[in-house]
Length: 294
Ligand SMILES: Nc1ncnc2c1ncn2[C@@H]1O[C@H](COP(=O)(O)OP(=O)(O)OP(=O)(O)O)[C@@H](O)[C@H]1O
Image: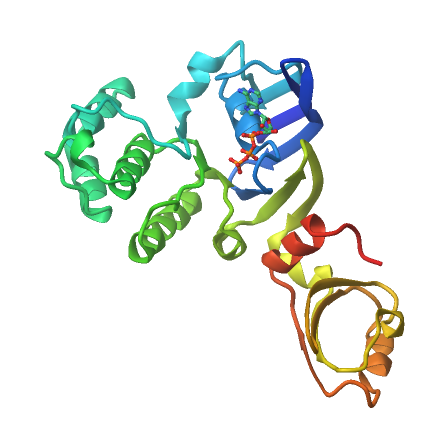
């Protein structure tokens, strides 16, 4: 069974289509990254999945339950942390934790609440209005984990968090995932997706352009850094894409044969080079900055 199953989803705002026939499946137990530039359609997809907005066409399901018709049931085992956290300003951390525990009818919640408050270093009795953005985010994360949801949907979860808390969050997410939690993670932080996700979908202008298994990143090709003061683009081998070029330095994503790459590098005009495994960030640049591999 898919944790998330989106079939032929499209969305129009004021007659303008921003999501076009989008299909996406997330397996139960995956940590799944959702990557795309600003305005690509990540939040719109998540909001439709959670029935905050209606799709124009298509079927969206969570654990085979229809996102619209069975939204109430879905909320019992799905938690969501939005990119902009909003709470009633006069509630304290403890109020919010208790409300969450009551909503999900969590028995013996005190220990779970104490553990999360300790994990995220949150002041239990401060009102939301007194807290910084990062501290509000920590409360949102803590309440989302309190119910130990079957599916956790996070939109930019580390935005505003300091590096130590980011690390703690992901250690906790990994631990929960090992116990069966499915995690859907929309983020601009490609390093964290690369480190923690099993797969990632890249979305551009309302369409999924590729789904990448993170463990198979070497299949993306190679990143070749070259130093040369005489090299012209017509000298490059086939199957390359320029990621960056400044003065004498070039960074290429190369997807051709090793033999041809070695021949290309073995010429006098190349003063120095390194060959590396591409990161998700390299792939992001290649997908969103200037089109396909030549
Ligand atoms: N309420 C709305 N009314 C009209 N257009 C909207 C509305 N919400 C989103 N859009 C448009 O839909 C497209 C997708 O937006 P969305 O917020 O889903 O992108 P995103 O990938 O989440 O971006 P970001 O990374 O900046 O959060 C954008 O072109 C945006 O301008």
